[in-house]
Image 1 (cartoon, rainbow, N blue to C red):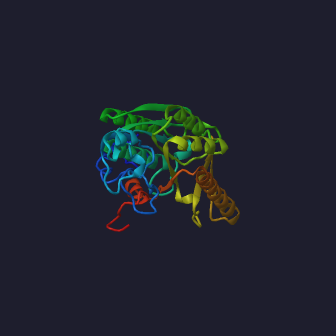
Image 2: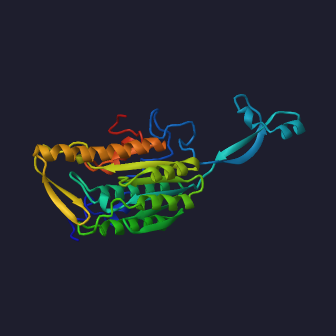
Image 3: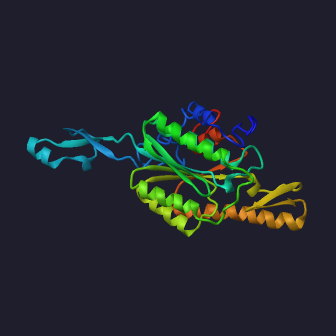
Length: 314
């Protein structure tokens, strides 16, 4: 693998993923987001998963939540007393990063696999910067690498190491295992680990997603905060009017002339149809979805999706 390939567009390196710490400093899953943001809600952190720890008893003050009145203490002292709480810290997070062969494609700026690797590292740094435990699962078509959540820079580096290793193992010579249930296996393993109060980021093109995927995502989101980061290539939205497109299926590769009408229409319908099917499934899961194009930089897209200021504007 030459230096040009390790440019973060086709392949990523551990050094590049670790350097994203600085770009993640102005991003947060837990900061207050503008109304309409993907994470907007009533919770103080904008994420449901954190619980509340009892802090102290104190005298009631106008405006206090009456549900927090401690009746026993109030009767004992003869004055209204409320229980106060602080938000839990050190929350576990799992970053799921897809490095299957379906991700090893890109028609513009970068490959989906490289974009997913960057997003995984950015998400990990955001969790770490928030003071929480970070871990994850990195998977290709055959293997699943697990990293248990821990509040540790070394643990974050271990996760990024696995992301870079699987990313650099991708090759056009690798067989395509599309149709197998690897995504569902990863979600099933995540469900066994994340019983409740986890933040789970799923970074994938969601190729091969089906009814079982939908069921697992609903189960995960019942007691955890789950965010889907769908990576896509603009080719799925609009085919060029001319030129050649290389289509792969398993070890078979076919170059198609998209300028020919009998090729352009069915291929465009197929690619856009797959993207729409995944979008429909994710909507049905009721999991917040962020969309990331291979034509744009990961950091700026993530900032926009989180509802942060971009260039001084919302």
